[in-house]
Amino acid sequence: MKRSITTLLALALGISLFGAACGDDDDPGASGDSDVAVVIGAQDFGESAILAEIYKQGLAAKGYKTSIKTLGGFRPVELDAFKAKEINFAPEYAASMLEALNNKKGEASGDIAATYQKLASYLTPLGLAALRASAAVDTNAFVVTKATADKHGLKSLSDLATKGKDLKLGAPADCETNPFCMPGLKSTYNVDLSANYTALEPDQVGDALDNGAVDIGVLFSTSGAIAAKGYVLLEDDKKMLAADNILPVVSVELGVVDGFPQDVRSITDKLTTAKLIEMNKAFEIDKEDAAVIAKEFLEEEDLL
Image: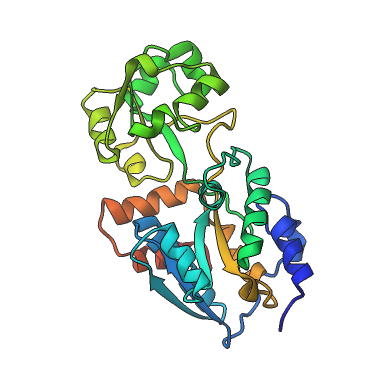
């Protein structure tokens, strides 16, 4: 029924890390234990609700007893819920979780392997572990309209160095000091947009792009607006942006249940940034229910 703690640490430090495992060690059809209760914490935003439903329904289909606890808040509330054993599973974000646990020491980077290893070291004393990270990344994203991309030949952040230095940037106020925003652009891409920068509320960025008040906007990389408006997401070709890959954080007790990491991985491995953009569009723009969105995703991926 249980694996050793040594086995769990091996999972946390290698097998479960995105890109680090061999494909032969998993059994996508593994059956879960109906006596194992998986209580999933959902933070107070749409994407978290969607991910919670994906894991709830996907793991239930494998035989686990699953439920969702709506936390009504964000990461501090989630961590309290883990501590109180009110939840034992939560969809999380590697870089953001790391910086929350290390009091913003700046240890997160655009390297998911390095960020994951650091995160694991902070989770262990809390009786928690991170399972394999997905390819889906929800981090700062620099976007432009298709018209702007076509006019200036923009496909990547590197293109800004030669084609976009005079363009106007609109982004949340912390972009000036956030290492994964303007400072990162300058240090990694040698692009300084500070002279043409306008601080905006997050919900103002799309409107500013659409009416031409700014040429480049900063949104989350899985924002539904990217699909709804047809924005071009500029490729972070030098890996400057934070490795906020989505990954499950679980209690040690849950993480050592036989077959559980592999069953979770069969779901996690289907998550991509592009798929989350479409799911967030369905939730944010089309006002579909998170449970319905999750069910459709799982059916499309043959997980139900």
